[in-house]
Image (cartoon, rainbow, N blue to C red; front, side, top):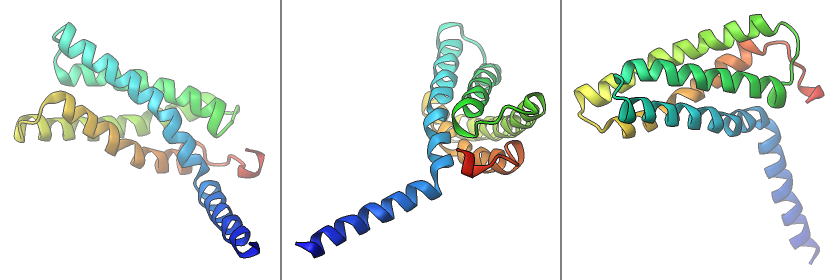
Length: 149
């Protein structure tokens, strides 16, 4: 009986360590879903309802998603309140890098591989944020104190 409890505690201990070591990535991902959802919905509306070119629609939708994600990460993930304009400019610059990567990916998937534009957009929403997380963690929110979170 004790060995079963020990194994159960070891499993929870390992799970706690994995979650603890990656808590910012997990939160970033959860918060990012709201920005990605906003991005996706705006993109779909602009391209399908108002027939706006996918590149222009992408610029608008990504900008809205970036602004949303910055505010949420400031409030709920990295919990920093200082230098917000500077941090926003860094966050947005990293977002622009991501936007460029997403536009390139969209172009390759849609124009070269003839993949449906909605499926192509989903592919960019999945791949780009991972790169952006690490850049934001070490550039935008550099100096946050993990022990305070």
